[in-house]
Length: 305
Image (cartoon, rainbow, N blue to C red; front, top):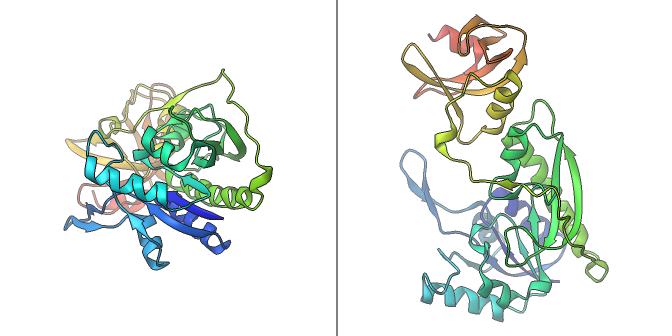
C-alpha cells in the first residue's frame, strides 16, 4: 500500500518504522519543523523526521496546513499530499491536522486513519495519556479511527485496551501505547479491504485539554490518591513542583502511604522516601529533583540537603 504519514513524536515514528518494515511504500511524510531544545537551544528534528531521513523518505515540515495562515507553504504541502498517490493517509499526534479541511480533502477522508491514544470517546483532544492517569482511570488504549473535521470525532475502526498500573507515568504509558499503536496500524493495513468503522458512542465523551506548565504546583489539600496520580501523570511534562524552606523542587514519582498531618507537612524522611501529608492520607515521594540538579532517589535527595 502507498502511504502518507503525518506526525512529529516518537508515537508516530514507531508507526512509520513499523509500516516501512511491513513493506508499505511511504510516499510522503509530514511532520513539524525542527525545534530548538537543550541548553544550547539548537534546532533538532522531530522523531518522525529523524526516522524518515534515515530511511530516505520524502519529508515536508510545514508550520501550518492552513491556506489562510500561510498560503504558499500550505499550498505546497497540500499539493504534495494531493499528488503523492497515497492509498492511505495515516495520522498520529499531528497537531496541524486538527483539523484542516483542505488536508482531508487532499487526502480523502475515507482513506485517512488517525492513531489516537485513548479508548474513544473518552479523552478526545491534546493530552489523552496524561489526563487518563491524572483521572485515575483503570485503563486506556489505542483507537484507530477515520479522520473527519471534528476533534477526534471520527468513526472508530478498532480499539484495544491497556491497563494503567499504579507505577505508570505518562512516560511509561506513552511507550506502551506507542508500541501498541504501531502494531495496530500495521495489522489493520495488512487487511485494508476488511476494515469496517462504526460511529462513536454519544455518551462518555471527555476532553483531554492541553497540559500547561501552570499546572505544576502540587495542591496538598487534595487527597493522597489524587496527588500521587497527578505526579505520575505529569512525568515527564510539566513535572510536579513543591516548596520547602523557600526552595522549589520537583517530585517525579510518589505513591500513596499511611500518615496524617497538615497538608504539605513533611512527616518523615528516609531512604524509602519523603512522606508528605495531604488533605487526606499522605504520599511517599521516592524520586525528587532540586533546581539545576538531576532527578535522584529519595536518599540522595535527602543527603544533598
